Length: 390
Image (cartoon, rainbow, N blue to C red; front, side):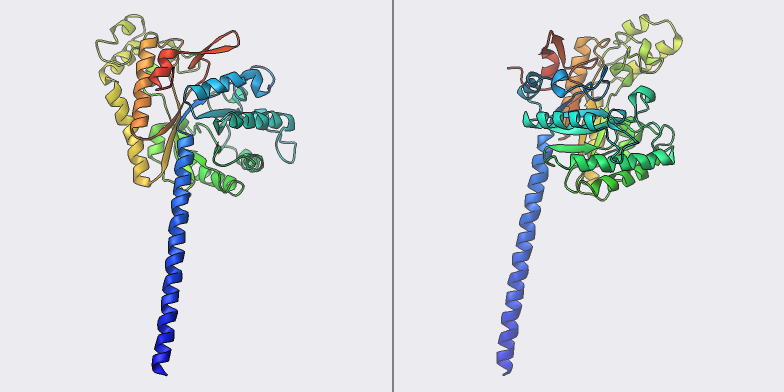
C-alpha cells in the first residue's frame, strides 16, 4: 500500500515537473520571439529622414502626400538606403475641439491615406506630433501643455481619439511620438510626470505600438540623461542633436539673436579655425562667443563623447534610443564643414547602435535639392550619412 502511494506520488511529481519544464520552455521561446520581434522593429527604424513640410510648416491648405512628396521621392529615399521617415504633424492641422472625436475628418483622411502610401512604399513611419500650433507657438512647440490645466486634459483626450485611429496601422511599421521637443523652459522637471500620464492614456489605446518618450528643453541630451525611464518595455527614448548650436544654427532667422548673426562658423573648431569668423563680426559678444567656441575644440572625438553619454544612459537602464533629429543649416554652414559634422554625428550614433533620422529631406537642413519636380541628392552629404549613391 505504502509503495503504491509512493509510486503514485513519484509519478505525479514527475508529471508536474515535466509540465513545469514544458511551460518554462514555452515561456522562454515566447520571450525569445518577443525579443526577436523587438529587434526587427528597431532595425526597421535604423536610418531615417524627416518629411517636414507636409503636415507641418505646410504652405497653404493641406494637400495629399503625393502633391508634396511623390512616389518618386519615396522610391529615392528607399534607394538611398533609408528605412523610415518621420512625419511631423502640427496639432492645429488635425484638431477640432467642437467635434466629439476632436479630429478634422478631411485632414485626418489626407494624413491617414498618406501614411498608408508611405508604408506601402516600403518605408516605416515615425508619427510625430510636432507642435501644438506652429502658427501661434513659434519654437515653443508644447505651447500651453502643462501650463493650462483645461488644455492639458483636452490634449490627453485628443491623443486618445487620435491613438484609436493610429491603432489601424501595423505596430511593426508605425511608432508614435506624443510630443516633439517639449519645452518647459526653466521648469523642465514638470514634463516627466506629465509625459507619464500622457503615455498611459495612449498606451490604453495602443497596447502593441512602440511609443517614444523624451526629455524637456527641446528634447535636449541633458534632459534625456536626467530622465527616469518608465515601467513600459515598449518605449524607446528619443533625443535631438544639434550640438554645438552656434555651428548648426548659424544664420538661422528663428534662432537666438546671437546665433542668427553668425556666418562662416567652422567645424571642427579651434582658436585658429575661428579667426575668419571672428573677423566678420563687430559686436564683442559675438567675438567672445566665437572665441569660446574655438577654445571648446569641437571635433569628432568630442561629438562621440556626447553621444556616448546617451548610450551609457540607455545601457544603464536597459532601454533603446533613437536620435530622430540632427542636422546643420545649409544656408550658412559652408559645405565642407557641414559634411564633416554630419559624418561625425552619424558615425558616432552608429558606433553605439543608436537609430537616427536626419532633419530633413528638403529645406534649410535638406538632403536634396529640387530641379523642377525632381529630387536631386546632395551627393557629398549623402555619403556623409553612409547612404548608397551607386
